[in-house]
Length: 249
Image 1 (tube, one colour):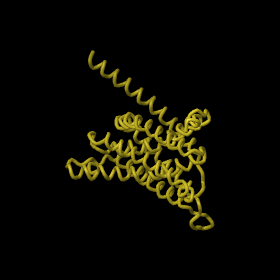
Image 2 (cartoon, helix red, strand yellow):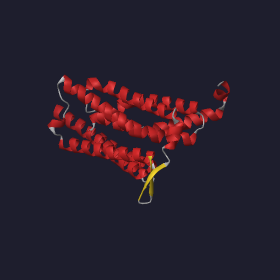
Image 3 (cartoon, rainbow, N blue to C red):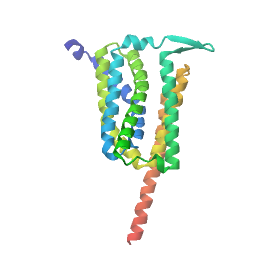
Image 4 (cartoon, rainbow, N blue to C red):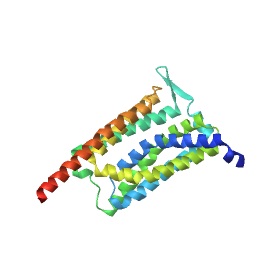
């Protein structure tokens, strides 16, 4: 163990894998932020912690079951000449769920329907809370499977994988609240984030049929959109400040 800690190659592998896990976790953070934003403010922190805690537990359990995870890449059956593995099924179901959930949230956000607002009663609030946790847990499994398979392809030492997962989830836990609050404060950013999840859902669905879509393209498109929206937010703030100064004078 001491020899491993003194090996610079181990630390390089840990740093690279942690950075990759954080990048892959962006999807997870955005999904959690969107769902948690539907809850009353008093429940949001707890939901974030439970959601990311479940994400870490799922990743660690999958790492401890590497032989089973790698077995998921073997074809179970063939459809029109296309081999379908357990991993493909998980990605397909996860992608379709993301497409449905993100599309529905965009509809609710644009239509602003009163019946989709958080319920006031304690019983309904509890049901909504656990419903959100269940949805987060479901998509955590999809993102965790992809993350673990990527980790296995990069690093041989299970201890390095575990340390990288724990470190990346710790970073995500710190980032989740400010990102979530920013998304809630700016509805236009929320719609952009939901559009990002639609693209991720499409990419997962395509991946299930062995059509790889590099996530770098998706992240680049999202970064460009966010940069444009940041300029719009800054411009709106300046206009509001100018209008307030004119009213005060």
